[in-house]
Length: 356
Image (tube, rainbow, N blue to C red; front, side):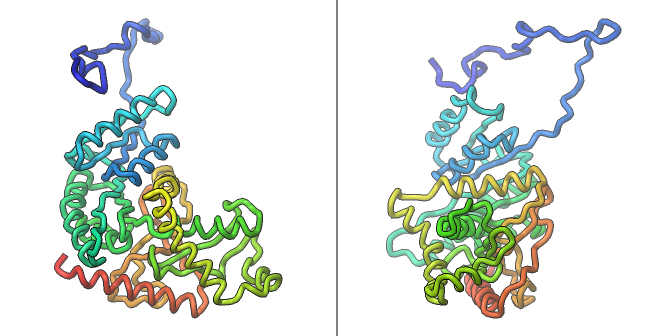
């Protein structure tokens, strides 16, 4: 028997299959006039069905954030297997249409396209060579997605996320407000988790941001960390002599290195990034206007040079239109200096991609 994901693929004509089960409700004249379904359906495409892409798709599905999810990957058998595995859980999940294809045309009409696809680093390969291979991959993905969904928002998750968000912006031709990188949204969650564990509070009650690059030069904004409106750093330094500059840098380094620890233990990261991206999807598609530290065009913020078109993470207000605004947060001079250094690092990486 032919393998299929629906009865129609097995040769059964669907037609109006539900007519044998349900009778229409008559109006006052005794006639039934069907009306068109007026609710606008929401479509999300996930490009890249690896561990990260599938964790994102699964979390979006369980949170009922989309009416249709399109999966795209270069490996057809794995792709179909992932789709079928999710489809077989339909009885336990909200009603969501799942489609998949190796052809990016399946993303047509997307409200949001999430790009997780990226090349993996080969032993001995330089970071620049890896970046150039990912740029070559984005040349195939981003223009096609933009053509099929010219009104979509782009959410870039592939690493190095800040540089690839810049690349996606250039290749798509979209306004900067509609091209977003997942940035330090997850880094900030890791930061909040460490502080919450130490303070014995819920991580949701900790206000703390990592900004700048999603990587080695990220900046922990200690000056604005608070719980219940109370500044945390001052309290910690008053009660613990060990909270000196060296200790603070150790905590920041722990946040930066935490992904490497997960990868060394299980081989990859998936669940945390899945929840992180789903939180961004909810804020965007449900127009929640929540603040997230995500990679945005940061030119002119905190002394970043006006001629540096660099994407890095700053607290941004997200909604259906994408980036609705960026918080011009107060930083200490040292924090601002580190942010500018982070921006310089990213700009140098972008400059290596001249001719894009």
